[in-house]
Image (tube, rainbow, N blue to C red):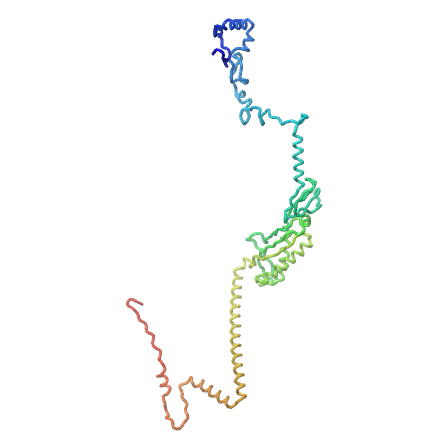
Length: 383
């Protein structure tokens, strides 16, 4: 081990380690002994590698504790003085001051700059409020305002179609009284959009509720002027929808609501659920009555057409009669007698030189074909 340093310190009794340097070492050792124990205690003895600092002497040596092991350890392991460690410090400016105020001021300036730039969509508009009070309206495009909180911007889609269903629930009823004192359950849809954004934002406390109330008032006023049949028929529904739209628009214009009513559509028109069975019976009876009425009208039209045909034929005969009365009278007589006598078994002949009896009816019946009897054939085991 000559020429190598022992990591555990100089062992005791190391004077005889080397012949050449024995005296020298012994002299040093004697000097050390004569000089005092304190110096020898600080420089000699094995070092404890587990103590903080990686060294120590045997005198006062102690075992490492938990605090010693984790004293210089952070959540990511032993600290080596890198960024994020306990010794990390933000670089300073050349004048020795911290960069933190500059960073904070830069972030605030960036936030204020972002709040000053606004991109308004092609179907949108925006209202600008200065210290909470309306000041202007922004059109579509890239727009600039004062920074927040001096000016605030509220963007709305003004061209998009919005729909309101009344009543809102599918199982709810909206009973409306008709002009003939009947109740009808109506469900309808109102479509609208915004045509004046400042009025829409600042004239109405609740735009959706305002549209609902205006639609219901207009529908009740319109249906009260119609009958129950009008609300069920296609033409009556179209008239009701048009009237409701006009009434709604007039009311909203008076409110300065900034809303344009695009259309009203009746989705369902039914009788109240409590009388739906009776209403169906009435509907069936009305349909039967309509069918019988149509049948009677058809019979009347057929009878009238037949009578008109006979009258036209009589007029033609009358024209011929006026031209030759005697010939026409005789022809009519012959045709009438032929039609009448062809249905009887009697034969009328002129007297004189004629056999008194001729069995013409029996001869006629014998010459006519007789109907064949229908026979059925049954097989064995058949029934």
